[in-house]
Image (cartoon, rainbow, N blue to C red; front, side, top):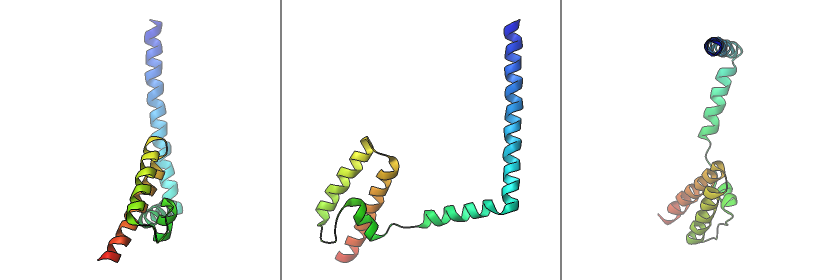
Length: 112
């Protein structure tokens, strides 16, 4: 009997808590739209996503110079990419990948 009462209390409490969270979230969205915070956040997110990596930043990430041969860049990329895949972070791994993509387009433009 006590377990049945306890189970009912847990279920009812969970429902009340869920409704309170949903109501608080709706109120936060309403407040944000009044203050223009939501639009500003969306604009900042779009702006950051549209940023491209520069050639200089790509060279710094991979630790290469303008005179470094493409084969050496690929070796550095593979080493850094694998190290971050095993022990590092996904963020660093993606930065390494973006750096290689940037330099790849630079080297293709110079050859073609």
